[in-house]
Figure (cartoon, rainbow, N blue to C red):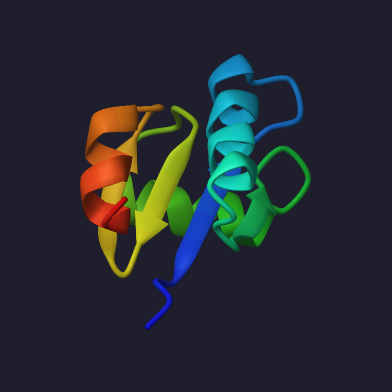
Length: 78
């Protein structure tokens, strides 16, 4: 069964771009929340993490802050 993946990001974040490229390279579908534009998503991210750093990646409720490729690989079962 496919994992539910969401990324909270900003357009200028280098690590966000790396994470999205990683998802594309591994054919992982995800929902993107641009916290620079979407205040509701930004508030949701801060509520979940207590901080403003991006990317925040949510894989089936497991949060990863930053682009931690090894953790993403493990959570995605790759």
